[in-house]
Image: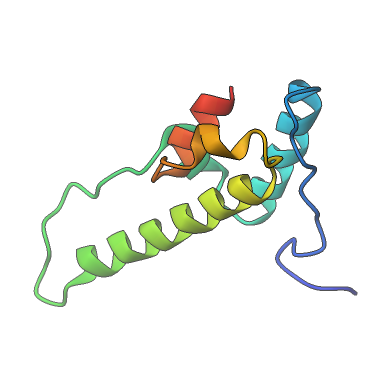
Length: 100
């Protein structure tokens, strides 16, 4: 079996045309990485403050890393002409919403 974690799914390049097709393929890629919820709903800050072991900090770091992965996938899946529209976005949801 080639790869794992959906690494064998290649993102199509969005050039401003066929957005619906691109969106469907991208959603499946995000789901295969377990990060679609971040792209769709954005970062959800944990309600609780840091406990004695710092678990809230580690949860937030994990979320930020997943969001950065999603943003990187989006950035890599747009043409050079589209990229400037999302280049200043810092979250995957922000970039996703602009492209929508």
